Image (cartoon, rainbow, N blue to C red; front, top):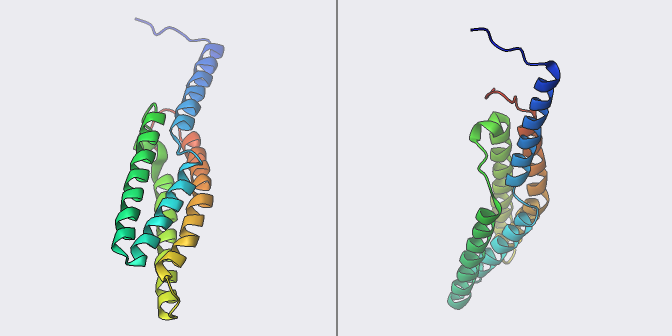
Length: 159
């Protein structure tokens, strides 16, 4: 049996449709911009509450953090219609996520210890401010980069 020949225009149109669908999937699954500053604010409030060492404030801050984070997670799950496969992000995307995380952790811990050494009051809370700002500004930049990475991956397989 002979394989039917597909006209070049039909193949081109099919590839354009696949690319269009991939863009829809990638766009539908990226973390929205409002997520990042919200996480930063929740984190900052929680750290400030814990650092206050007042039991009622620690308890209230913990409840606000847990409820806020739970609400964010539910909103993200409801928003997400499909799941992006890990091989679509690839090693470059994974390394970008790891680098983003490590930089924010290093800034927070390093600054916190430095402020504590200098005797500055509320060192953890103050160190959390640039981390929260980094989340708010860097998170959308990270998502933009990941979108570009996913859209440049080959259509047919993982490379």
